[in-house]
Image (cartoon, rainbow, N blue to C red):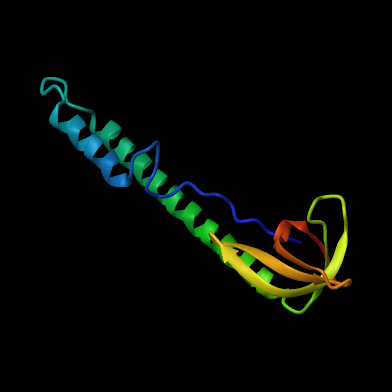
Length: 132
């Protein structure tokens, strides 16, 4: 079973703003509020809690993405020396031994020597259908 790392929203980009920018918005809101109609304390605390939850969710999302990337790396390196069935074009099934694993942008790809001696490079983990 091949795992593909999930593309995560960075903790530095909530609606195009980082957490510091979101806090600056709250500060601006407090600075320019009408002194005769100040913001309700409940609303203010509620906004802070929402921004805090947003930041925590983004941090958790980044951590999960890193975990999936690490797991995919371990899975790929675990295939070294193993015989795999893979379908590089989606229709032709090839069989070969995994000779090496390379990483590009955190994504593993395999180099496989097929049973007829052909070397296939840049084999995506998602094309592996069976490990023997």
